[in-house]
Amino acid sequence: MKLAWVAPGQALPSPQTALTEPPGLVAAGLDLSPARLLEAYGQGMYPWYSDGQPVLWWSPDPRMVLFPEEFRLSNSLKQRLRRVHQRGLWEFTVDQAFESVMRACAEPRPDQDGTWITEDILMAYVGLHRQGIAHSVEVWARSTQTLIAGLYGVSIGRIFFGESMFTRASDASKAALAVLVQQLQAWEFALIDCQQQTAHLASMGARPIARDHFLHILAQASRSPEPDWSSTNLNPSLP
Picture 1 (cartoon, rainbow, N blue to C red):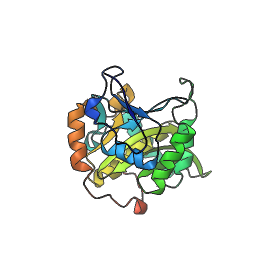
Picture 2: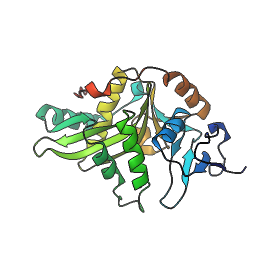
Picture 3: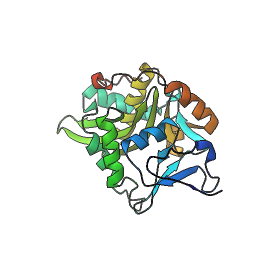
Picture 4: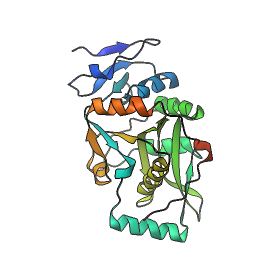
């Protein structure tokens, strides 16, 4: 099957037309506008490509997702996060440093050759953030008011599409995810899209589901009204 090329102004094809090799690749193009991103997420697709390539749109099958009620932390991590919380060492915020979180996520890691978060990607998601569609969770060291961890993603209805996270302190990014899950559960979110299967995500309760199942949940949950992210005050309540 030939890969679909999507010109600016042309609609993305159905995710059901994704290639089997490479698995989940739906289309390519040059448009990475906030409008195109919103269209893609609404249909269960996301961009992932390297610098110098066209924009590649993906919808893998199966899809790795985390149902908020299935999130789990190890006992050792629970104890560590409880101590951090009791001592007031970290502060959690929402949408206070979106671009800084993205730039930190884009920093090359020892096990990576470069980053997929290019300047074009960054600017496109900053555009979504300004529209109130993309959001970040930040973790700050209270003593120095420095950013030590965070994550970002896209929220549509009652679905959160997780994109990336970073940490500069042990377990801080896991804490960011834990408080996000807690808030999304309170808002009755259907799921967090994790995109790719990894052992790390699986250890915290994420699991693969069929693309058809994912798209069915997306069609239902994306029609729900958006919660008010601007009034969110993250106060972790860890067991």
